[in-house]
Length: 108
Picture 1 (cartoon, one colour):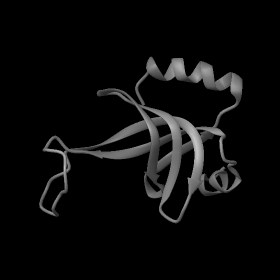
Picture 2: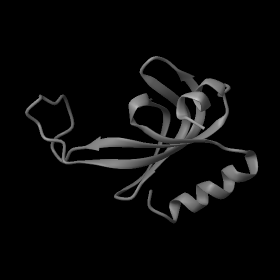
Picture 3: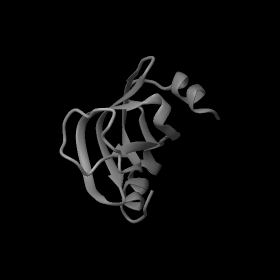
Picture 4: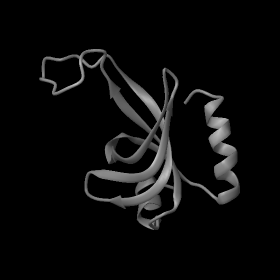
């Protein structure tokens, strides 16, 4: 099923697993200019509760994000640009607990 169709069927509070691409730079954190180079794009796996969606972002709450080169990041809220989403899966209760453990043991 296409990502936009899945998003349109989501209900607030559903647990979802989102695979998306994030830009990573090794320079100082802060505002970037058009001359700043983005070192690489990293695939991220974020598992959280669906909160809302607008024209640009999918918002998760109570989520954790896992990527291969950095420790797991826990956040209260996360806005993912819609154009960066590669996969989206609605999790069932039994799957959720199993997948959190499995994701920690594999790269994205």
